[in-house]
Length: 258
Image 1: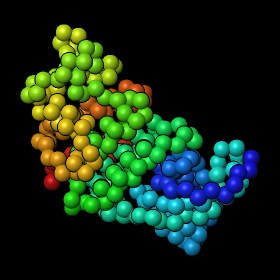
Image 2 (image 1 turned 45 degrees about the horizontal axis):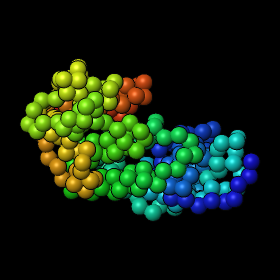
Image 3 (image 1 turned 90 degrees about the vertical axis):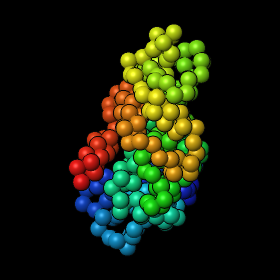
Image 4 (image 1 turned 30 degrees about the horizontal axis):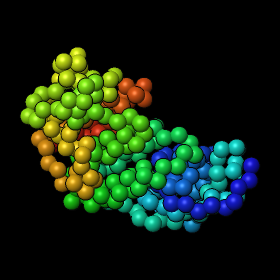
């Protein structure tokens, strides 16, 4: 199949070494959605793509006019628009960025563009790159909630998902992953009992912009409750946990011990 040469903005979802010198890269692009391309000679020659194939970077990519193997493009050129290199220099910010990218990779379908999702993740990576100004945990949770919502898996945290009754402030709530969120006692409740602090954090994060989330500061124990509930929610809908959650848990354990 032949297509016209196409230039689009993109970020990398996954990169895998292939054969002796090539690399197979999964991108999420603003115009084409999730696509896969082979970068010939990317590993054998720094001159070929230079540093323009780094994770967390926002790139301008040129896809050659031959679509290989029916579904795979050939990457002709790649240029960095914004490197966001600071993310990779901090473990907590790197795990937050990786979590967002992994969820996008697992949820989106091939060749299904979503400019809103692209712009959301682009903004999130830019915010995470300001490592001294952003709280990576609250940014990640805010963005994960919005990625889920854009993908058709909105988490109901502000109202009972069965009767639309508003969640009372300052109260514990019951959460049912299978039903998609908070369920009041009159509607049967749910197996997860969230503290009032965690319920409040959930609601605030679901309504915050990324910039607002970057400066939020909740007690660690409340964020842990939110993280664990959201991890279970994602695992339920994907049928498996995100790999990055294990990495993030190891970082949290190390930070707690140090």
